Amino acid sequence: MQMPPASSAATAESATREVTMEVTGAAAVLQPGRTLRPRAAKTQKMVPSVTKTEQGDEPDKNTLEEEEEHRMKTPKPRRATVLRNNKKAALKRNTKVTCPGSDEDFTLLKTKRQSKGTGPRNRKAPVDGAESLDEQPPKKKRKRASKAEPVYVIPEVETKETTFRGRLGYACLNTILRNRKPADEAVFCSRTCRIDTIKKNGIEWAKDLGRRNIEDMLKIIQWNEENNIRFMRLSSNMFPFASHELYGYSLDYCAPVLAQVGALANKYGHRLTVHPGQFTQLGSPRDSVIKAGIRELEYHAQMLNLMGIGPDGVMIIHGGGVYGDKEAALARIRKTVKEDLPKDVRDRLVLENDELCYNAADLLPICEELDIPLVFDYHHDVLYPSPDLTPSDIITRTNMIFARRGIKPKQHLSEPREGAVTVMERRAHADRCQRLPEALPDDMDLMIEAKDKEQAVLHLYRLYNLQPVIHSSLRPPADTHSKETKGRKSRRKTLSDKDPTEGDRALDADTDALGTGFSIEGDDEYD
Image (tube, rainbow, N blue to C red; front, side, top):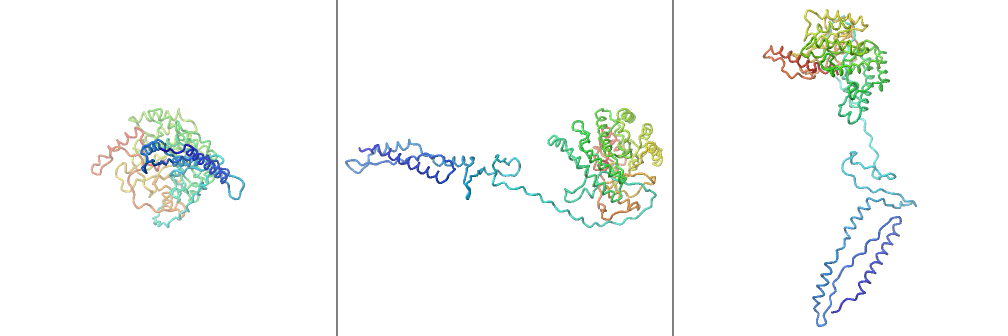
């Protein structure tokens, strides 16, 4: 048997190595600046050699079997896998290429293709000293053009006569400014947030909302002056969570803007008041509730003080719940006012009769004893009247307290919605008031608590010729009216049309609910 010469395999391997080195060197010359590793020498393909026997043309079977066994034991080349790995490695490296027409080299950062999405989680920060060629400048947000107001059809009104010449006001929200389009042009003072948002974004987030709220008050006061409205209630949500036990904060950070608002209001002769929320209950049997109520009053007092508002800037609160014993609750109110309230808070405090728990007759004795004025609410007096006391009698007695304190008297006016029958339905404020009360004094301030806010004031201006009205500021009334309040609902059933006696039980149920501190008002009184 004739075997292949031993030197032939070595000669072939040497020739292959030389060719590989020449190619590698040529590549380095053709692409200067690029560092390449020499490729592994190509494994020589084993070709079985077939020899003929001396006696004939048939190949030797033993030789074929040996060569086949040798080929099976030889590992297969991994050229394709190596190339793929090299490409992946090249994507992660910075490679230098020559810029055409320049002698200098610059570095290009080759990055992986970004995953889907444009959020911050999918964006990868660029490496220092390198810029991505795919990076595009941020698109400018297109500002939407202001929409022109449609032409409204304003119905005529039948005028009435009155001797009243005082100021009419509205609470907290101007519907025309609030509904401006686009939304980023809306003007309002009740931006707020949740505790979870404060935990996530920090207290500065809430404080910035307060700054924006008070800045918008400058625009609202200016609009009011142009439309002859010089009396307004500030929103209690002006500074979100300012009185909170854990997340509360001082308003000193916003003192310059507050001073601007107060200066503008004083310049025009506008009266600004506040109405802390229904959870401000000074007669609660729980000390924590009373302390929370005092913090809320202190927050409102600081806001008015930083504005430079005089004594006419009062803070109105209700008696709160009766908690099963009205006399004991009144005693706690008396004690809290006398012993626990700071002087600047007490100087601005006034009480108001409500429709379920404390009528004017319940509050007048404590008001006269502590020299705290009473704000008389006509709507509440209709729902929960005072026995043996007419509205004129109540107004006369409380106006004497106002005079002793040097505060201009004020009252509240609202009406139940058309078709309201049950106690809960009659509590809901109508969109607008259609008449002024008969017992209304000629020179006093009357807060209109109605859903249409400034439109309710302008409507009364037209009805009684109280002030000139700009026609473009008018909006038509709604075609349909709900009979339900937007405040928190009682869990008990109210008066049924089939069973009139259900009304008394509904009143008792609401009174029991108030004893636990539930809301007793709709949102238009506070917001």
